[in-house]
Image 1 (cartoon, rainbow, N blue to C red):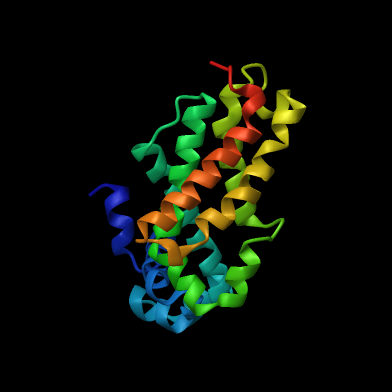
Image 2: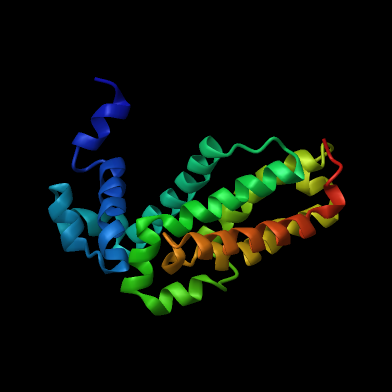
Length: 202
């Protein structure tokens, strides 16, 4: 049995715990408790507490995994070719994937205050992951050093995240084609404007 297959069957493995939290959060958002996680994992609250201290810490790990997964899902559905147009299409797909994800809606439902804060928070693990992923996508626009080799380009990941969150964190639009098309169109246009200086890059 391969390690990738077996870890989900070990109730004490980190992989199993995070996978369980991800599943629970798709329904209950931030209301998922240590007791519920322990019950679903087949382990104890004491075990979870000794390793992760709180349900909040596990929520964060699950959200980090979901965010990374959203970028990977978008890459498969709409891979970037390294041009401004390709990057724009890819990041629009990322925003759409997050908007339609059940965890997004569940967190908005369970914790409206925390969800509102997510629209404007300026630091933290989720912000870091998003900006790192965006920076990776922008790298081809500056062949000599990526975002770190171009001071102007280095400002773009944060600006893209800032304009992207209202588009991504709008679960009430999911399923309303006209609303989603409007969000995607506005986001794509703002992206094109932000990246216009690099529009001739290969």
